Length: 381
Image (cartoon, rainbow, N blue to C red; front, side):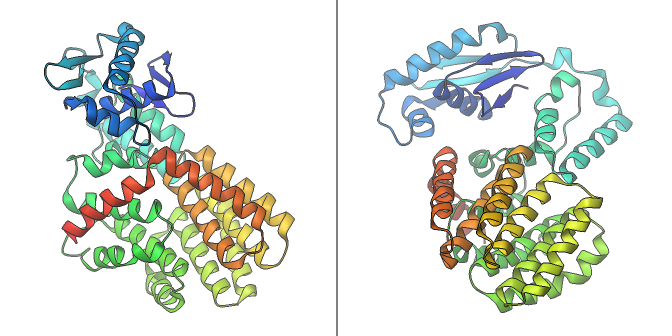
């Protein structure tokens, strides 16, 4: 499998990498992630140049340059011209070089535990690297992580288009995407309420339900629905205590902290933040530490400690960037903007993070994703 690095616009296989220009990178990645599908030039223009007005010749020129750059990988993939249509990417048959490890059940269990460990520790870069190079390393596929890694790295469009999962799972991903890419949390609340209500009839795994309910608490809080948030926190308390998951518990404690702050109980909010800090000292999960620092910045803002809040906020966002969990980065940028917009306590930093939000919106195509997620959710809920 080819690995794509969005920061450097490099594609890699094994120990070899190729540098591309930004649009070459985006076009190759789109074709690769939709391997086997034929696309017209117009479809490729819409996918890769949505805010521009290039011509069909633009696609042809980019395909020509990409073909030259990836010629050394002709044993892995080719970009074919489909007469009368456009282009499609074809991956070569690798059955003849299949790893003998693929039939080793004990090895498959070890790999599954390793993926789960990287996930639980918030190590998004390691998770992505491992899944991107599973063919080179002879690793077996994992039905959950083969899909989840797309969410981690922000391949939201792929998740909304793929058929590699059940409808209920795709609906859950669509709900998370919908909540992640828009600035009006109240619009996502009905979708999450319906998903939680239908979780039993859909035989949804427990960890999905915990994620949905924790996300619903945040949506209630950001929508000003304090009583609903408190009710959901109390309803989840026994399960969170019994779960013994540092990751889930850290997020749950931050939800409690936020509720106390919204209710004006600053002392209780500080106590919950301290409890979360102590938990993360015992279990250093960087993804959750990033969220903890953003929550701490909110508390510092509430206390009027603007310089300290800024330093803590910047540290939190940088921590989240380095985890390579794209949805968590976007969600926390969204959360701090909601707070700063309501409190109007730091206009210059609010403007700085609004610029970051707009950069993310352009990079991942928030508006297009929001509409696509709504279409799916309205059909299936």
